[in-house]
Length: 615
Image (cartoon, rainbow, N blue to C red; front, top):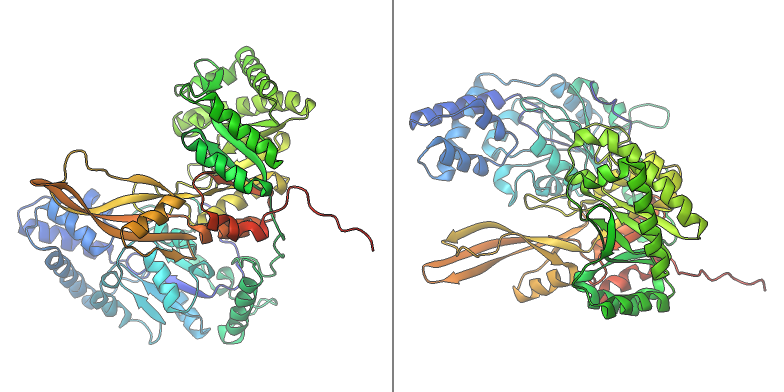
């Protein structure tokens, strides 16, 4: 054990196992077979290339071997050559990982459902399963049976569904970063047991050194008196409880054996971006009665602390939004973004003189606009400044907030901060953006808005899967003394990815694009696609083919869209209610649909709760 001790969980529904590198140490077999195949075609291979394939779908690996190793064969032929070589080695000797067979036997003896979730193809998986005790696995999901392999969440979602369960109620055991990402995105409680490739500490999973550290007690399969529990006794009862909780509008989370009832309702707020201001204003006019705060999103810090609106924005549009906010009875709390060069804001806050001047500029902005407070969205620290500077910036940021809050609170104004998530209360590479001291901020600001989105930015995947979002909320709760100061940022957008193409695309063909909630659903209609909502990630997906260009410069793009739909937004409100935090904030107003507001209205807290009178 190097990072943390596994924590006991409350009776999961099943255990979902990766195979290669987790149950059996076949990675050396794969690597040896890759070297043999590449050498046969006169190519060059390396351990670095081989290790980069660990955990990937076999067809994806085969493409890399073809392109980088010079193996001139069809993709499926490469896959089958690899399988033949590894299966031959497995039949000679099965290289078990320490503790794997023992833990599988314990689960089997206790009657606990299990699933094998491997990107290997079924004929190889069967060769390994044959060497295990009968009925070691209830179901098996293999790489040749899924549309999207790891790191996509589909394999784990499929395994849970095959067991008649939700992935969020299951434990996953993985050995590679690719597999861990898949399991976490699906919402599983995940254990990482590194093997060939290291899995550094990170959000949403527990890193352990060996399967020998896991047993039925650690995994949560115990009665209240500590005796091992058989699912034959408790599984039907758990299923009934989950159904009852869903029917009551509650959210059931693994890890809470006796769930506290969720809040009946929760405050709703949102940001109003300048580039979609007429639509955001229309949303406030239509639904502002259930909004507590609205943040006009057009002020920027430039130069050495100068604060002002986006130059191109028409004053009449700004005034229309502010008036709509006030007419609706909500508070106007404008957001300020840091548009300075990397390192500039850190230097500004480190100097007491320039820091106080910046405080004065922000206070003057609030007073000049007669706003109800201010929201700081200073992200350069986290995404552009080198992490080696964070330890220095962190206390200066807190000093700045202390000085600003003292003046604003004396004037009856609010101070809010919008910050990226943290994943624990430490200061390691896996702790998230720890430059923002959540604990210290919680003592001086009125709101900490957790920007729980942009989980997938470099490859297709969820915007902010529910399991990951829950991790961020709980980490914030562990740091901040007052949970009611925490506000969950809820995305109302998605991304449209190119996942494949055929032909020669024109140079100006679009790649990845951003889509708003309302536009994603209109796009699905236009492209005759049917969005599919995944309750585990709390998001919707659909795909379609797009013809681009003409003549010699024409291609067909295969596109895949991921976005948070209305049901996903409601699920995030329910998560915030279950965690008893202080509210949610939509990014962004103007991206929404009327259906969204209809769905969230029953749990949106009124601005002025009706107090019943005595009879």
